Length: 259
Image 1 (cartoon, rainbow, N blue to C red):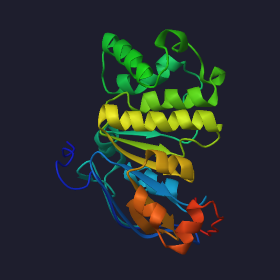
Image 2: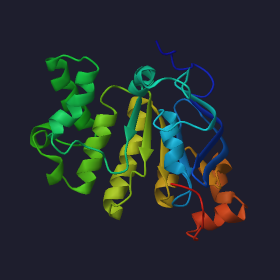
Image 3: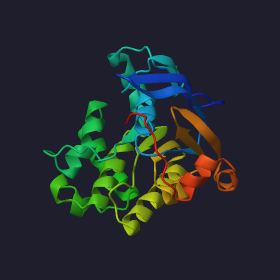
Image 4: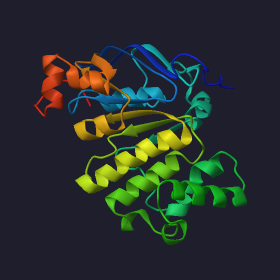
């Protein structure tokens, strides 16, 4: 049985993570602690290792060296079957949504609930509830197939699925990528809404500066496999670090790191 989420201290803790893919050193001693109830944004250039960092939190990627604590459980060495309880506590919004193309909206949302052993009536109620939380009408969208959804609707449905089994944390991988500015703003508002309504802890991986400052409580800037800057959004705006300042001003930051 997984340990209960900690009442005090970090909910998610990454300590001295190292990860290499072939000749590419992606993470080089990354350390980061995420407090209960906060929204931590991980910023960095494309290819800086942001998504790799996120996947470590739920054991989709294992570190070559280092320690990963998620919701009170040290997970870096857990066998795959032992990760199930931890993963049920953490919702994951994948970059492309990762909806099952062969299932309609209802069945996509019902899938994690059925896997968790929920009964039919309870599943029906919960699917309608989470669709409402992401501002979608359950009646009009439940029978739609993913191929008929707009990019923004796919993100909303994917977010509804991520929160279906009442997680204590939500991970967002590039939630606004590929969206027009108006739709991206709507997704940012939903991220803030989820944090406020559900009192969850969130990690948002992005290279979208506008999104980062809209949703984040704190910002971590990932560069060359390490956290180069960590602070509040106010501290981020005032930072004198030349690389970080150039990045948030929209400057181009080159990197040789992995994905």
